[in-house]
Image 1 (cartoon, rainbow, N blue to C red):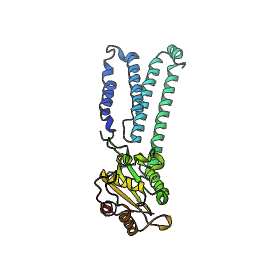
Image 2 (image 1 turned 30 degrees about the vertical axis):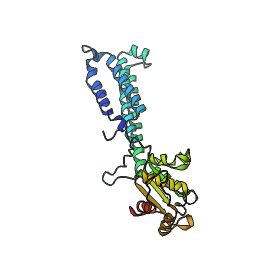
Image 3 (image 1 turned 180 degrees about the vertical axis):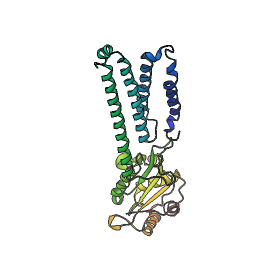
Image 4 (image 1 turned 45 degrees about the horizontal axis):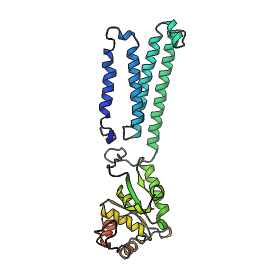
Length: 298
């Protein structure tokens, strides 16, 4: 069940029903002479094709590679049933030429063999290419499992992180941060102003829509009114803080001491909208600088 999206935890039961139907229940169709007729193959082909369509539309797996492998396996199974129908029809040369277009059952069997080998070869090529791509592409992985983290989101949030920055000194760097995270963590959703900002009046709601609060510390950050709004909203909602520090003054950075002084002189609002119980600059200093060492941006 851990491989499935939380909305599709029942999918394992659906797949189990399909397997039981194809492996056992289909034998109850025309129990006397069903093995010599087409109905079982037709039913099996229809069930496999419908399940494949449902799988592609529902996309029940968390990981894209799991979905692709499942689709390939079910496509091969569907094709096998269809090809079995072709062989069954070609039991008689006359019927084979009339319904399928082959002059003899031998020709139909050769066609089925070639097509089956081709499908298997194509599937192996797809799997090999996916594996090679996964190995060569840089990706963040968990130490204990060696696999990429499962990026689950609580129902009340649509983003894994909200990145707060000062436009004048941190815009280019934060865009790079987000794009790199998207490359290293496929599927991660980071709220970024150029991508997601529709109404500057809803910054507090946007912060609450993300699980984590990434704050990019550069010169002038605490002097920005909108940055302070985002900061107060994150403090109010007790979001985990991930501070990133631009230390290069030539690129808009500042020292930690300068940023702390800027915070102490700027974050002085009384009962701001996003955090009515705000207790002053010390609250910001504790969350941004003291809980964890800021990550230095290089």
